[in-house]
Image (spheres, rainbow, N blue to C red):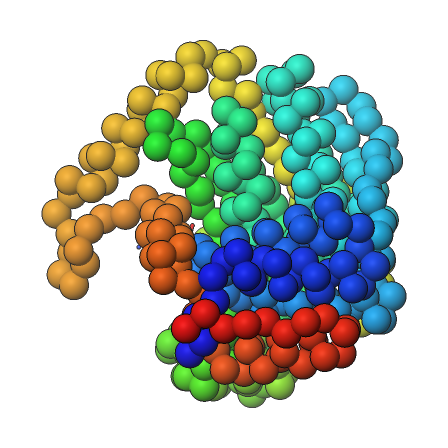
Length: 345
Ligand code: NAD
């Protein structure tokens, strides 16, 4: 598998986004966030997304140079009109607004309307935690890819959420889809030519399958955590969608990647001492590491720790790109008149 450094991949990705007509700061940020997803091991939300984003640019779904603006503000609440620019740019603007409102009021909420795919939610939860805030980011995806608990037809999107809290050793981030895993993981397995684990996907007939492509042939993901995960999936399908004022039918075209988003923040310093909060979080981490691991496990980890480990490894060794992803990126370079990506190893 080709290995590419994060720097090279970011530089290549930014050149691609500049070729779409995005100003340099927009192209750089979209590229950086996607490559950071690869660095954390979430390849489903990394450069694999270039193909879909660039198709959406061609289809008029993404307006590459568009910048968000405030639709309205009321007290500690702001609704941002992302104007169908890159979703990451709407999210970046939303976070900055949220930080200001949370520092002023102690608690704040920002909804992102008319927002394209924002990528990996942990990106934003970590940023908020770095700002001494407890952050919660929720997305309601309008696609129908997830079967309800007890059902055999896809009814909702993968509807992810991410929490970020500050600790003495950096943000602790819990970030996942409320389906058993993100739908993008099927693309990753398909690109690697590998079967998916059991219990993820049912085919169009409602039968269990380990073929990742069956999801995109009328199949469905299961919710995580049986009826509890299903309930959470449903809440994510409702709350961000309604508060961002973007009903699923408002999505442009048939693309199911729009991301009505709700971001919440609590300013810890409005409640008490930040140091006390972080000390407790650090104690939790140390306690977890002292717990006797289950058979086959080396260590009990906290949310976010698997990503920290993969990041250190990929910074050292490079980001592996499956052959199919590699070929797609080279095809996009040709299509958009951008110099090809050079492989490190
Ligand atoms: P996942 O199933 O890989 O779970 C990841 C979470 O579980 C992380 O918080 C991780 O730290 C934690 N975790 C994993 N192993 C652990 C362990 N051994 N101990 C403790 N914690 C552990 O994630 P997913 O559901 O496949 O989602 C992947 C990404 O896809 C996320 O970043 C999510 O934001 C993104 N996503 C985005 C959209 C969108 O529309 N923008 C939609 C769905 C998913």
